[in-house]
Figure 1: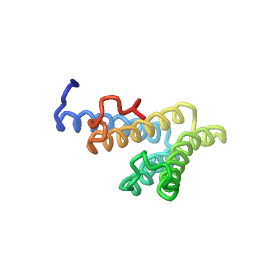
Figure 2 (figure 1 turned 90 degrees about the vertical axis):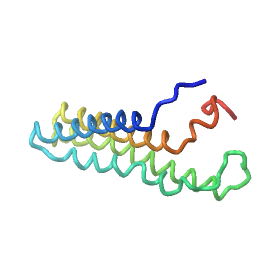
Figure 3 (figure 1 turned 45 degrees about the vertical axis):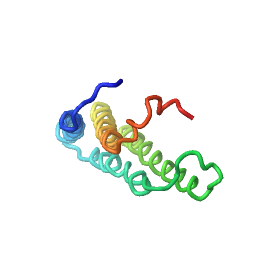
Figure 4 (figure 1 turned 120 degrees about the horizontal axis):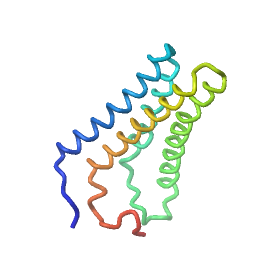
Length: 140
């Protein structure tokens, strides 16, 4: 019942989104001659790695008694959240310490979030897990 979009269209849209994020981060560095926002960008690049490493686990959501698999899933979500939160907080700390200015801080945070979200959306589109159920977000 949904709209089918070709994989090529998905890749083109996601590459445009990724290029926008890269542009914001590069501009936040080059316009103000300060390359500390690249550290923040590296944190956003590393953020999806914990989920990518352990995404092949056998946890299907219905086996609530399997604590070992559930704790591994919780651990990967914790590290991903830690890296995303660090990517947001790091430019704010740099701005507070007057290492970068406010505009560079905002551009770095927005660019990093756009790059991270495009990587997550890419994984979401091409694993096919969103096509299995119409109400995947609301099914229990």
